[in-house]
Every structure is written in structure tokens, then in C-alpha cells.
Length: 163
Image (cartoon, rainbow, N blue to C red):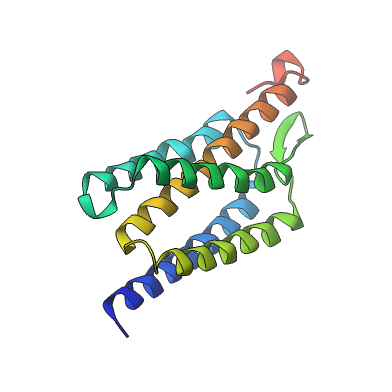
């Protein structure tokens, strides 16, 4: 197995582990009320990953940035459609969605396929950079949409029950 194939396999396993982690976090989140902080912090924390682009190996062209971010935004539509809130006991909860699991797995499989195809044309570092941008392009609009939905639903709560 070549070094490039080994790195590709390791990054794929990492992506699988992240997907499993995301599923557990999502299931756990549905059991507790949510708030603005829980919605906006994931993209804020993820944004520190842009430091990877200080390393020349990970740098991508402006066209690749636009491509990756656009694909991420397209993928985010599926996550936005499966992220709904509900009011229980005058608090806002994220609804559980069986479709979310299938969409997350489908997006992961699509990501793995795209990564293996692109890996033949673009260096592993650039591919990694592009898929980070894709992931950020997916999480940012998703979380902005969640924040909008949350704020809209929050306005329906009685004043003294808002968090």
C-alpha cells in the first residue's frame, strides 16, 4: 500500500469516526433543551481548522475554495430539512429525525467516493483542505438556519419562560 493510499484510508476512517460521533451528539442533544450557544459554537470551534491553510501542503486555489464551499452549501440543504425544533415544557428541543441518520451516512458515503476520485487528480493535502472547506460550507448554513428557526420559535414562548 502506497503512502498516499494509507493516508487516504486513515482519513476515511477518521471521517467515519466523526460521523459516528455526530450521530451520538445529535441523539444526546435531542434529550436536553437547546440554546443559542449550542447552535453557534460548533462552526466557531470548527473555524480554527482554517489554520491548516498556513501549511503550504493544504493550500487550495480560489476556484477550489468556491467549488468546495458551494458543494458544502448544497449538502447543507439536507441537514437543514431534517433539523426541526419543538417546544416541550416551555423549552425548545431539537426534534429527533430518523432521516438525519440516513442523510448523514449518505453524505459520508458521497464524501468518501468524491475524495477517492479527486485523490487521483489533486494532492492529498489539497483534497484534505477542500473537504474541510466543504464541511465548513455544510455546517455554517445549517447552523445559521437552525439559529433562525430557534429564534423564530423562541418568540412564541411566554416572556418569563425564555432562556
